[in-house]
Image (cartoon, helix red, strand yellow):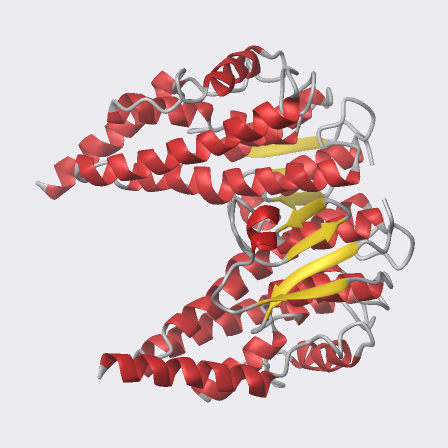
Amino acid sequence: MAESDVKLLGCWPQLPYVVRARIALNIKFVKYDYLEEIFGTKSDLLLKSNPIHKKIPVLIHGDNPICEFLIIVQYIDEFWSSDPRILPSDTYDRAIARFWGAFIDDKLLALIREVLELRTAKGQEQKAVVEKMIEALELLEDHYVKSSQGKAFFGGESIGYIDIALGCSLPWLRAIEKLTEMKMMNETKVPNLVAWAERFCKDPAVKDVIPDCEKLLELFKMFIAKEQLASN
Amino acid sequence: MAESDVKLLGCWPQLPYVVRARIALNIKFVKYDYLEEIFGTKSDLLLKSNPIHKKIPVLIHGDNPICEFLIIVQYIDEFWSSDPRILPSDTYDRAIARFWGAFIDDKLLALIREVLELRTAKGQEQKAVVEKMIEALELLEDHYVKSSQGKAFFGGESIGYIDIALGCSLPWLRAIEKLTEMKMMNETKVPNLVAWAERFCKDPAVKDVIPDCEKLLELFKMFIAKEQLASN
């Protein structure tokens, strides 16, 4: 299979899931065609490539579609297996990286979805969810301090699996901070994560593909306005 | 690290998650101590080993705890890496196995939980969930027929990742069939899965650790009686 025969199906707004795949491909210097789905529609290629979930992202390598974001990242790391490694080479460290990847998806991203679903609801409910997000971030701060031992990233001196999993939610966290006027990436509570986030967003594999939080915020506001219009 | 210094924290009722880890260890002929938690309580060892989720199963290898069922199975396959392999050796096949493992957890096991939560609710709601489970099983039947090409298991001639992920839910599916009087592992709709299930449950790595569906059914009925008593 030609290494260069790689396509990635994504869409705007670029969900954290799509950005993860793009960063993983950038880390490995894999050239790919980025095919953008039109928001709210599903192309024939998407339906054919992911008939079970009909969702982006889908990586298409030759004739082989690979679905589900964390599976895509693992596939990229295993197929283009030369350094830099995305998952740690040690078996136990790899299990730990997968654990935190699952934690980020099951807790943090689930809470992001919850805040967005509550966007027109009362502030009190939203506050409770944001507080849970802060708790999740504090656990991640704690893991980062323990595991990185002063290194730049969760994965050591270069971006790894947990960095990708968490880093792609940063623009969403920031947009929610602005929407709710509640600080989550707080320098008092998670000082190491705040510094890590800055390094992550400046990384050459990240900076051109991570979405702009202001654009996401505009999008949220547009959705809110649309809903308010519909409910009047 | 001594290969034999392996403990598995589980409990009765043996959730599909715990059984998965036991089967994976059996496949690799790894000797381990099975430590049973008392239902409804959490031992100090569990709290220390899985401080984030405080949930079984936890595999403790030497001093290293590994949490989350599918991560445990991957760890076992990667640490005891000689044959038989649990995950396929081909990179793309491995991504596909992970995809269906996630499908089984996110769809089928989520629906099992839903049926059990509805246990005292009206039959109509329960019926709708069971129908969704049948749809999920039909997709798995379809994948099995396409991928196994007449072989005994999803993983080929021996039990692999998808087999373990799906097989451990069989006793729960059967208990739900009896509870709801609705057939799911239906010979007309999923004939190949029915034959696969029989082979799976007879496998030497499986037969002594897979829970008895009658005992699970008794447990469900006990919970129902307890709830009805509490609501009267």
